[in-house]
Image (cartoon, rainbow, N blue to C red; front, side, top):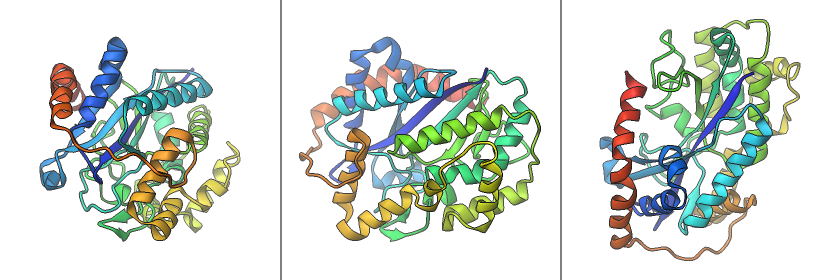
Length: 327
C-alpha cells in the first residue's frame, strides 16, 4: 500500500521580511519535542543571488509517514497548530513573497510517495496529470509587487522545472528521491486551504493505484506546465481534468478559482500587510480574511538564541541531508 508524507515550507515575516528570528521559533519547537523536531523541521537561508533581500528564506515542517490520507491531514493540521503556538510572526503559506523579486527565496509543498509496487508506472501516471494538479495549490501571483500570473514560483524558481530524462536530477517538478527512496512531487506551492491539500492527496492516491500506464510526453508536459503557471485553467488543462474525473471526482471549482486568484483579489483591494495578515489568519484559523495582528519586531537576543539553540545543533544533520540528496 502506498505511503505518503508532506514537507510544508512557509515564510515567517516580521517587518515585511523573513528574518533569522525564525530560528528562535524553530528552537522552541525543538525544545518542546527534540526527538521529533530535530528531524522533522528545517530552516532555509537565502541563496547568494538574493542575499540582498535578507539572510532568511522559509522554514519547513514535515509530517510523519502514513498510509491513510485522513490521518496525514490530521498530522499536518497538528503541525500547523504547533508552529502557530510557537510563532508570533506572520506565517505566510505562499510560494513567492508579493513585493520581492528573488527567485531563489521561495516556499513549496512537497509530497513524498513511498512503498510503490511499480515506481516507474506511478511516475508516468503522476506526470500525466501533474500540471493540472498544480492548479490546486498555485499561490504566488506577484513578482516585485506586479501581477505575474498564477505562479511566479513555478515559472521562475531555479529549484524546480520541466521533467527531464534523468529522474534523479533534483531540480525538477518530480524526482526519484535519493535520500528517501520515494517519488517526491516538488511542483506545488504551499497553500493554506486544507481542503485543497486533501483533494490533492486523494487524487494522487487514485493515480498511483492505477493498473494501466498512461503516456508521458515531456514536451506536452512542459507546454501545459508553462500555460498553467501563467494563465491557470484553460483548454489544455481542462482536457486533463476530463480524464482525471473518471478516476477521482476533483471539484472543478478548485481549478477555476485558485488560491492565487484569492491572493490577487485581496492584494488589489487591501494592500500588502492586510494580505499577509489574511494569509496568516488562514494558516492559523482557516479563514482567509485580513485581521489585526500584534507587531513583532526583530530582536538580536532572540536571533542569537535561535542560532545557538537551533541552527548550530541542526547543522550536522543538515549537512548530511544535503549530501544524501545530491549523491
